[in-house]
Image 1 (cartoon, helix red, strand yellow):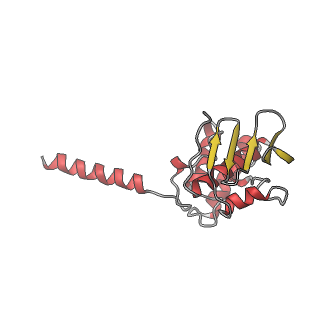
Image 2: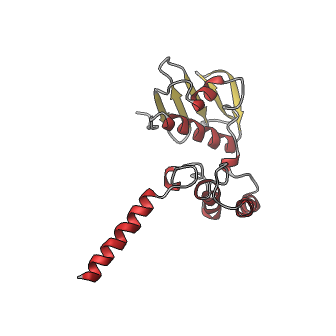
Image 3: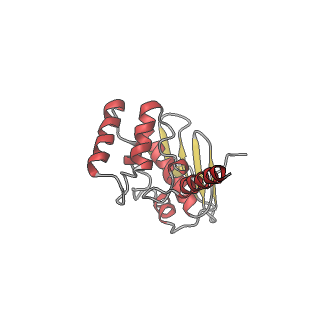
Length: 178
């Protein structure tokens, strides 16, 4: 009986610690998505660098050497930078200030609609930031009006992640189109 009780206590502690475990950015890897487009070893390396070790964060807990080694291995395997090291150009340009305002929380998010090819985040004023990957070249824009900022596939991932995080920061979860 004591053995069963001990197993239950240990199991509960393990479950509790895994539920409450957080990475340096405060989000467990299971809640992050920047590596979702990767497969095999590239997914493992991306997940380690971007999500578990949070090497892209100024508050990372891993050593600089460890981060550098994982980054080098990812680049050697894929020939491209880690998804979390790619920034969304739409959020860092004066051409599309709505992206930056959504990211900073300066403008409220009303809704987020997302599927595999398009993500759109709308405001109470009816404006929306969109990343569209349905045809080449992929692009981002505001209200589907010029300017259209062309995106690489890595930038598409970064911009989709940027908009998803901007919505989530305001308590809005992205949903599928109806």
